[in-house]
Image: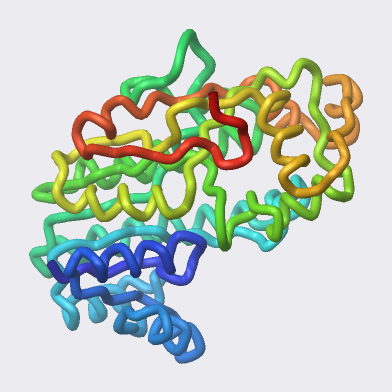
Length: 305
């Protein structure tokens, strides 16, 4: 299958391209510049110059490649995972995701491309009982940044699923961890926990769904052939912040994380940080396991029974 990846230089790009190549697919990557094209060459994909924010540029790139499927992994995230940097990057990231999504969908229809894989979220579900399945609502009424992000994913999925003749698979990934991500000892979160900048807030009851970047890539390749729809691409055992964060700190050679009350965290870090630590809802991966034969590894820094 001929596959065009938009956002191929992001965190999931390298393992995704490798998995696609191992699966026998011809891989192309949409990039904005010659510098990015050079990086993509080294990853084993053929670069296609095009600006995801420019409709005519996207249309020309897709007409040139004529892929069988498009994978949308477009993001514009900051290097450091802090409330300040995430807030600064939020508008740009939303623009890249939403306008890129619109431009890709329009160009697909014109070029006769039918298969579309869309990066979505498996960690911004609205609070509720038990693990969230794909029928649960997103947390569109949560704290400001969480609600804004959730609304963006609702918008992205709605646009894709209502586009005529498009077979869309929404990949609702958990928090990426592993090489090239924030959540690794050598990554930004590893450094932050060593500096004791990431506290357990309140009871730390927020339930986090993670996914190793390699497992996310493998599931994305499998999604080229599964039934259209939304799939939670998360690990088997969502973990409360008070459980995963101290274990992550130990794996990073850090001291135990500090403890903060919700009131103090609200004043110093803001409502979104408190939401992540106390109210996140974990997601169920049963549909992906059943439909894709998805078998994610256990969260690598937690001890197994």
